[in-house]
Length: 330
Ligand code: SF4
Image (cartoon, rainbow, N blue to C red; front, side):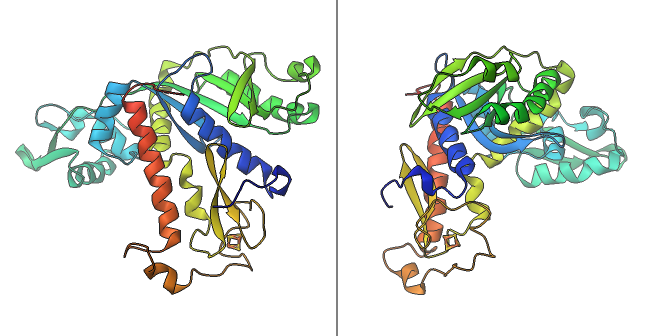
């Protein structure tokens, strides 16, 4: 890993900033005092995608959720697992009536059984019956959305205002923040006026962040409980380090660079923090890892590219362990 380079060499300052915000939130959530949580990025609904999502959890229930599976459940699987009965029952008696034909629920019952999440059998009249192997816990406490804007000047604030108004009025999240890079200047009152008062503002400075404006707690509609849970499951599945899935860690120039306490992708060939978009199959500077790298000192499963994935996955699991033990945030 190389030394931290100058911030000016970011090809995509928002991407690198976003990774730093995710890392900070993972370590230090919540600004008012430690709360067990995990972090994901680029998640949301069809109408709105958030940069960073923090899911606050009940540690004991989160441990039970992780014991069910280390992967997140898609909405079909969630429907079946969440409503799985303790005793054998016809699936139509257990699951709330969906807004699509019942027969589409059956594949999810088979899938859940294949994953060991439920047991299934043919009951009377050849009906598909199932029961749970363990209850689905009530593990999500709060869902928080953070919009990242390293350079929050007045025009950026105006551009964001409509989206944030939507977040506040829609109230799918319990709290909405904007994270911005601290500039050392006082925050202009006019700037704050452009943003909804309910939205909190975080000033990020290196590895720390300070609250420039406190958010209001929103009141999510109980009718959105399932949507919020689907979102939390997707966040659990993806985390925030999955950017590596669309980049080229198998390129010989790909590095993870330490910026404060975050690891950020860096391109040795271009001598910069490359953007997610340019570090792709189309990159003209891509060069595969030499085969020898895959032998020398790297386990049989792969070379440095695979090693990058393993490092990021290990970090994710370590942070999940920490959330499960309750908050030990620094
Ligand atoms: S050369 Fe291209 S593919 Fe390789 S690390 Fe740099 S940006 Fe990514």
